[in-house]
Image (cartoon, rainbow, N blue to C red):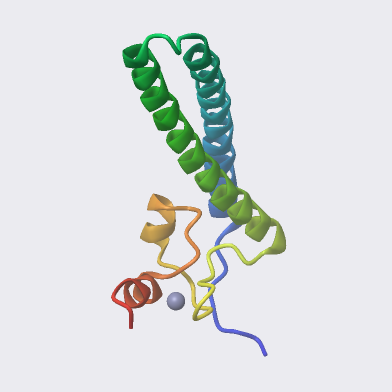
Length: 126
Ligand SMILES: [Zn+2]
């Protein structure tokens, strides 16, 4: 059953965890800011319904803030998953083939769940 893989060093894992945690904190701040912005625009939009131009641009800005917030939330959940994998000691394993994800890929995208090969295969639709 012992799968042959070199475990990531404790130092390396700690670096990944720290990177993930700081990115997480940053994203949380972003989400809060964006949600507040979307709320303000929402309120403003309903207060200006006699001026369609104002309402239109407020609604556009609100949608932008909402979609950015959605994107940040999405990233946040990927980061949370990566942190959980760190706790479960499965961090850095490809969820598809079980092999170690390339180190350079992990360094660029620490919350990735697939090795380059599986990712590519998925993108090209096999
Ligand atoms: Zn793989």
